[in-house]
Picture 1 (tube, rainbow, N blue to C red):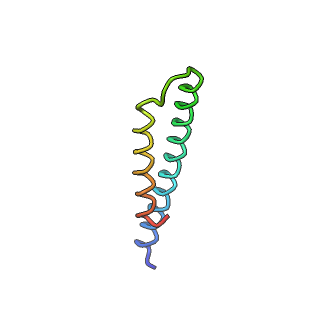
Picture 2: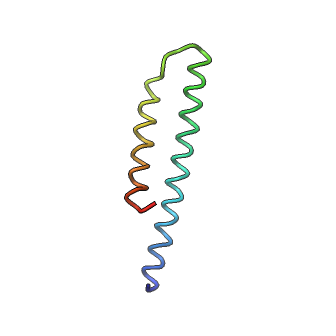
Length: 67
């Protein structure tokens, strides 16, 4: 592996880490949203579906990048 490949791999590892962090942040946000709706005896918020779709998109990106 040459230096260019090493730098590329390092950048990719960094991006994968950032994607994992974003997935975790979306999980937290989604949990908070559902908890608040439950506490108020409200139905599932529409935003929950959007957050689920965003999370799945990030997971697909992680799979494509070999995570």
